[in-house]
Image (tube, rainbow, N blue to C red; front, side, top):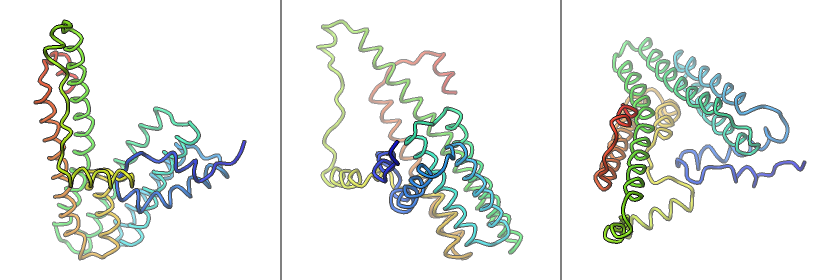
Length: 270
């Protein structure tokens, strides 16, 4: 069997990803994935566990006030977390358990690093603001990960209802009530910006959880103690604004596709 090439690894990248991953993580992660794929037998789950270990070391470093070490370890933890997915797609060795492990590992890493950062700075300064910082970061991250799958499920239920309603229409009704056509006339600037980002594999929502984590656990600690609260506050506001915008878009989607939902499906969403 021929060795994997860098082009093979590039093919495993997500079609669109966060700008932090595209520009600051993938250039390293792809080369690490190539070496891992060609020279080791490490499994994606093994990489996920290693990523979690690095995350715990990052939390410990932040808790002891060694911010630079904590930032570097957090970056390495996230980078390895990107490598495990590439290896899974490259070798076809991904498993449902691996998806769960990756998901839970991410949450543990973020919560522990938030606690470590808050504890380290509170013990050094006695400033309660750092406790608020840690709690805010942990709550926002958990809300984001609870909210995203729920919004996805709402969209799936609406699409199923729309499809069922169309199937129940008579041929004449289908002609009288044609399928709704999504608007294709966004502003010229928005359309050009979206194409520009798509060519570079960058997602349109530029502030996501990944950028949030990078700001709080990598950028701010590297800048120094004075940057921790201001950077975390700005990143938190931007992330919350992005979540509100996504909920607003979901609400518009529901309004455009007003279909009845069975009571049992409502319970699924609860």
